[in-house]
Image (cartoon, rainbow, N blue to C red; front, side):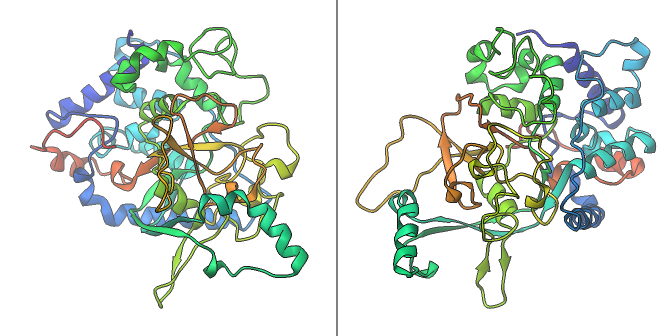
Length: 423
């Protein structure tokens, strides 16, 4: 694979930062060690972001527009002087939606306040905070889930109900550290920026083992891109629809390109269930981001009578309390985690191969329980299906949310080299 000039632009930008602060090894994500100095300020800004999300929930009929790349990710063409200017390079990254790369603490200090504030604004509009806490990854046994509809009908006929606490379940409690999650699934327009920037040609974005297969990740016309695109472009009028027809490796490569990562299974579940721990030690989790009862006006599902994907701004009333939209419905979402099916004591489940966890249900999901915050499906990481998309996550320690060049420079002196991949 050959590297694109967009990749070279980022390299030049990071090289300029290194020349100011000494030798650093910049990977897809910044190290958490370099962020300890900014915890109080970052948490303050995070609280503001949460407040913004709550304000948006107060107007459920209005959803903010998703980010659209301004340069459509096209390869940068500019003079050598422009490439030597950190602010110019940063603006080009911002046009592509790659603010996470320039909010790294070692890079942010090289920028003007104007550019830094533009990156901060982009972060605030496109991501929301999911706070620290525990989440219960639990579900009923497979046979109960599969027969759930029949049992509900039987209960309706007899007038009887089975209390939730009497249903056979398994539970795993996972502690999740605070992180940021995209407010929307990644859209066609956003993914087009990655394609146009030569993302499929940048070997550093892809897992080494999968590199030979990347040549097969093409659209209907044989060009690099999602399976259902044609001539390197998505269908007209679907720029704000979630991108589909991409496998787990493509989602992971895009996340690296923008300086983010895929959320883990537990992170996704915590964002959707929004658990609340009570003083007596019990934990309350929502079945759906909006509550415990299915409402087809709040999600793009089979019951919503739609024939395909919808814009990511559809059904704004289904947003989580912090302003994260479409965690349920429209498309399943890839997570970083391996799929681990629940096994009964007397039965062992043998998967046909490695599988990744997908969450949230899609426009063609029929059963309500499959679109709940507690349900996880499994899919081949090479699958490129019409109903699977993704959104990205970002660690609180991966970026800085205050502009302080002097302090950043002081902290950078003599800092150790960090690993290239924090996942």
